Image (cartoon, rainbow, N blue to C red; front, side, top):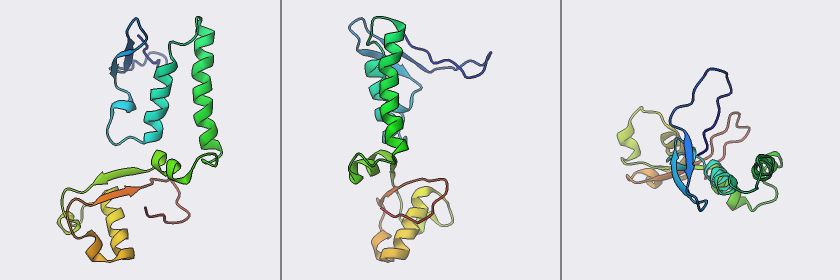
Length: 151
């Protein structure tokens, strides 16, 4: 069983653990992003690779080394801004997606990333392109957009 520690002393992390079977397969997983809808694929793939490697190595130092190599791979990907992978793969890792259950007009003044994306698509492509319900909006959330990017 793996239970992540808290960054602060005396603070407990509840319902976040991984349990492995004797054969090394994952028996149970609670509280990690890999199981959550709406999380970036980058985080899910990173966690999946980590869990796959947690039991590698015969000592704690060897285990940490294997897990660190996975973390370093993903840190390198972020540090070099995805230059070593195809643009389509990078966008798949860092974009979010949601399907609007109602038409854009039915959302009225409500705000969400999907509604904002749909409104910007309407400005760009015309209202007819976003009038129906079931519109799938794919977008990238960034802290300081220098250029507006629509997918």
